[in-house]
Image 1 (tube, helix red, strand yellow):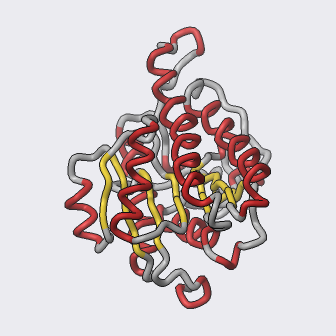
Image 2: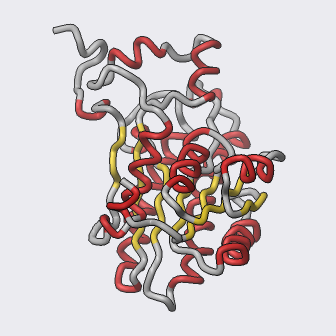
Image 3: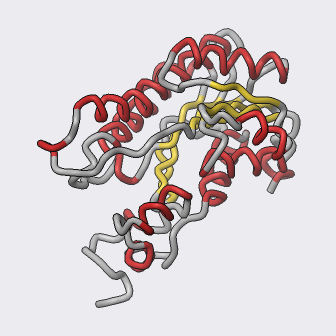
Length: 259
């Protein structure tokens, strides 16, 4: 795979790179020979970067524009250049009826996902617009393209990331900047495992509702990100790639194994 994608010695910033999908993406791209910088609010981001063999790290808040500018600058400092951004930074929301949602909590989710995606995209574009190159991959979600009750922060924010991806792709395409997004389904991350233990999700039922009969693994999403930032995807921009095991292909209400 690494020979086909030809990512060796290219540089990438991965936001949210200290855990979950971001960490798996960082590990894969390091293994593929990329110069990787991870950013995160996690206090252990430096140790994690060293452990996985990343080129460097940047600690910051994706929703803060100054921090986003610093993430790009830090990547250039240690890598001399920046070829791609994979934006995995995100937080979960508080699930509940619309009238019970605290607007401050709601705003924090929107700021992290939407404001963060816009801020990191702009920070990268300021470097790339004169160079006619660059690739951005955002993490959207199946809940950004499907309706669902009780996810009034996360779902609308991810839907906005979908449209932001398309809009930026349209504006920056002639400048050589590609912007795409991934729409993962349910992925077996520490967050999902925690929700399963708390009884807020049922992994067995989620797996039965998925065409491939299992949750995704973080590396499934990482592989898709690697493809989209590679030259193999050089004619792909403004696309939302579902990586959901067939979740959105199924129109039924429950267990896919039952008639």
